[in-house]
Amino acid sequence: MAPKNLLCFSHLRWDFLLQRPQQLLLRFAEDTNIYYVENPVFDANEEPYFSFGTRSETLWKMVPHLRPGLTSSQIIRCMRQLIDAFLEKANLEDWTFWYYTAAALSFTKKYKPGLTVYDCMDEVSMFRRCPEDMGMLEKKLVEKADLIFTQGYTLTTSKKVFHPHVHPFPFTCSLKATVQNLSWNDTFTGMSRLIREASAGKKSRLKSFKTKTYTGQAFNIF
View 1 (tube, rainbow, N blue to C red):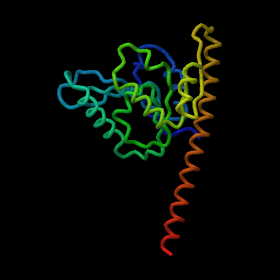
View 2 (cartoon, rainbow, N blue to C red):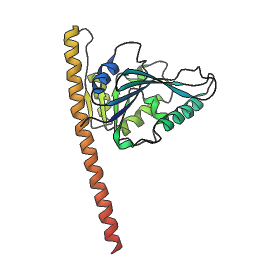
View 3 (cartoon, rainbow, N blue to C red):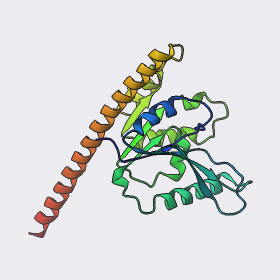
């Protein structure tokens, strides 16, 4: 079964180019409510807020608006405030968190969604202007993720050292448009299957854990 809701955190602007996030999430939106959180813009006068833009009947772009001049810690605090408000009444078992940027973990790490996916497009260490704590955040995201997808085989090799469920889904932009479309469909199909399997496995393990815990507690009573 497809996830009911998917909250995506991305460093890429939805309306800028048609890239990997758009190609995949538009396909997931056929059966799932998609909420695409972009990096903040700094144009708010007072309190932080989300602006919502509809990109399909089941896909919304969410832009955080923050005050200019905030420090890094203040930005994280504001983002945490916005996400907390957005998910205030959510049943997290019905949600998948999908990360394109490890930076988002700084304001979402407390959450325990039904499934956590990291779709890794680039090697973080290769960016010259990468924030100092990005490597640490990515390491924590890799530890937290139930599934990791990568855009290339080299990324798969580097991530498999730290996680047992890393799956490459490379893409070649030099392919003709018709072949590209088929490639994205195949990628979506493959990812969907792995997500279903991971979700079912996680629910089974959780059910088993709860049963063992209850049995153990009952045994201790007697």
